[in-house]
Amino acid sequence: MINRASKLAEIIHNSEKIHVVTHIDADGITAGAIAALTLKRLGKPYSIEFVKQLDNNIQEKLKNENHKLIWFTDLGSSISSNSIIKNKIITDHHSCNQDADHSYHFNPHLFGFDGSFELSGAGATYLVSKSIDKKNIDLSSLAIIGACGDLQDKKNCKLIGLNQDILKDGKKSNQIVIKKDISYFGRETRPVYKLLQFANNPIIPGLTGRESACISFLKKLNIKIKDGDKSRCWVHLSKNERRKIISNIAELLLTKGFGHKITKRIISEVYILKNEKEGTELHDAKEYATLLNSTARYGQYMVGLNVCLGDRNKWLNDAQNLLRGHRKNLVEGLQFAKEEGIERREFLQFYHAKSGIRDTIIGIVTNMLLNSFEVSNDLPLIGFSFKEDGDVKASARGTQELVEKGLNLSIAMNQAAKDLNGIGGGHNIAAGATIPKGKEEEFLQLLEKRIKTQLSS
Ligand code: C5P
Ligand code: C5P
Ligand code: ZN
Image 1: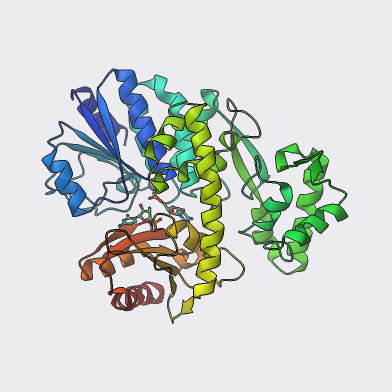
Image 2: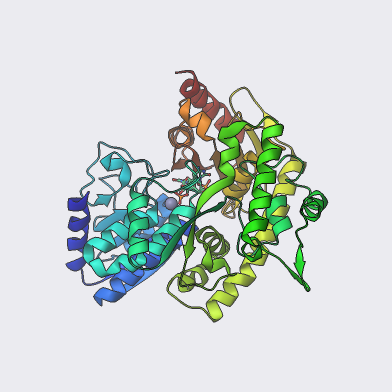
């Protein structure tokens, strides 16, 4: 792996000008930012572009642009060795075909690591950046944000594998502090009762989804929800207050029969960006990632990128405004999907949001639905949404339990999409695809057949 990283570093050193192509989610933005900062520090001229996926049109366009070198980050693993794009390097973590020529490709899957939780696209890009110059270890914080954006901490309630080495760099370069704290999203900026209301994985029986129950729960524990006219967030609570909440949630879960294994999941490692201001989205890696997801997923690429590059004025302000819209879209998207209804089949369940949910956030909504108490999580969930170009986007999400039983959504989505002249891929637990409109039913049948085989073998 070290050799491959230094080979890619050498290609970068030898190139006069580099075009970076990255993905529109938090991991893609942080990966792109790491590449951009690395090139800037080297004094290399570069340009950067964000894409939703690497389809044939994009590859054709890139080829016609005659770039000296293209650096694909957080995507590219699907490019075949006989691709029309010749001068390229790839730092990605998506599943890939092991047989092709990968001499220009840095990917954990090629070295026996699992790219769904041991290294993200930003992490892969970071390792090459570090190979270019040891001084780049301050960029480890961006790699941690990328990993959290891809939910790589979810499986073990902490980052493991190669991500753990990056965390060490984060500590060494004085960027990251690791703490054990409540797992739920929004420690820094969400009012505590909201943090409880939106709690999932595990849900809190009687509290998740019920605002007034969350407020009464805190009142009963003698915990004020406001300080003057300002709502109190998790980070504003005293140690004792936090302990009281955690032990009461644990008791609730245990008395409702959730068992120790699930109950333990209320505590996770959290990653604090110690040089950012406390009480802002930037202080917590998970919240930072969500802030980034509010930008490029809505076409506002430069906003997220500039925040990662260090802007704390105009661009941060723009990002915070976009975040409000993103949160609203997620709440409305969840509501919309529930109203549309989820249909269950033998080996999968699905819903079709049509134009009700943007294709760029259908994956997030699908993941939230599968983790909510209203949707059963014994089958993978597929969400469809219409794309602006007339095709259909499909997002699939599974659970760790299903993956352990053999589910591999990356393979299933890739093959079902291919059968219909579409494209698809991703990770075993989360994958996406684009298929022609009107082919949804056929796609579901092909997909269900694959999933059935995976779960029965
Ligand atoms: O394209 P990329 O690899 O960056 O995205 C990974 C996707 O997988 C994210 O949308 C993330 O939310 C999803 N994921 C998930 N559950 C996991 C791990 C990843 O839904 N346990
Ligand atoms: O778009 P969505 O969030 O559902 O994507 C889930 C995972 O599948 C992401 O890692 C994404 O990069 C990947 N994906 C892919 N090829 C596609 C669509 C999504 O590899 N055509
Ligand atoms: Zn990624």
